[in-house]
Length: 50
Image 1 (cartoon, rainbow, N blue to C red):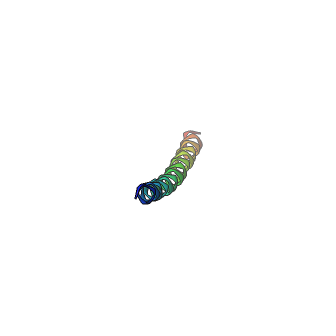
Image 2: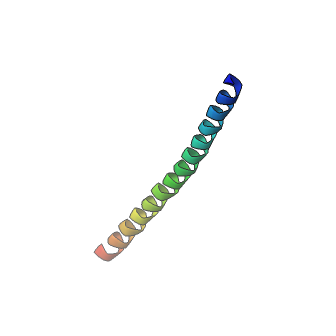
Image 3: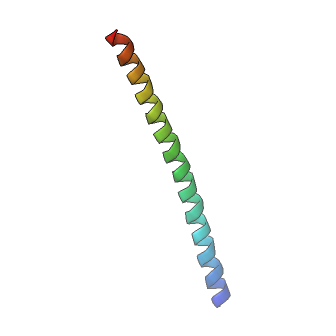
């Protein structure tokens, strides 16, 4: 019985890890998008200040 419980627990942990990795990837892409948006805004602001 212990092996089945260990296997079930391992499966749950693997699922949580996969979900965390997906969320991590999404958050990295979101951060990159914000950085690009800020860069564009700064360039637009610098261009309009001239």
